Length: 115
Image 1 (tube, rainbow, N blue to C red):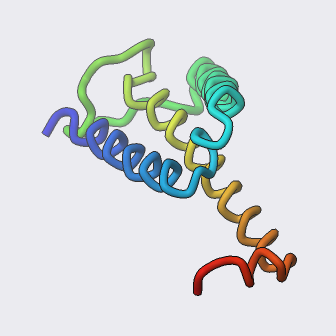
Image 2 (tube, helix red, strand yellow):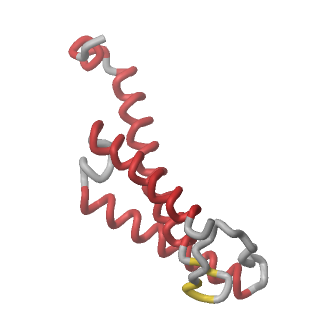
Image 3 (tube, helix red, strand yellow):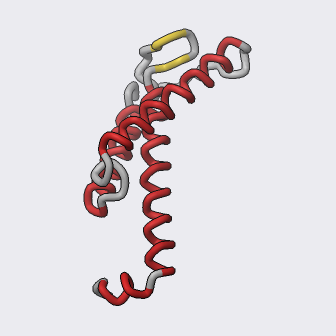
């Protein structure tokens, strides 16, 4: 089914955004910094993909789940969406891990929290 992969990416991003909003981990804690990191990270990885495509290392596979729109040869629309999702997910996971480590090290914050 065309577009299934893009839909899965968007649903996954919405789930991560819901967790982010609930716990104020990345975007809801620092929207400008998070947006900047996502844009820079996505641009870096798209450039990386472009080099891989130009050298013949990366090629677009055939999948009925892809929408069928290419931004460039061997660069489907879903690729930058995936890369942005990957960057956002990494920021949320990093923020959650840092918060967890901080709370484990600081007993004052643990006693203030509900069990």
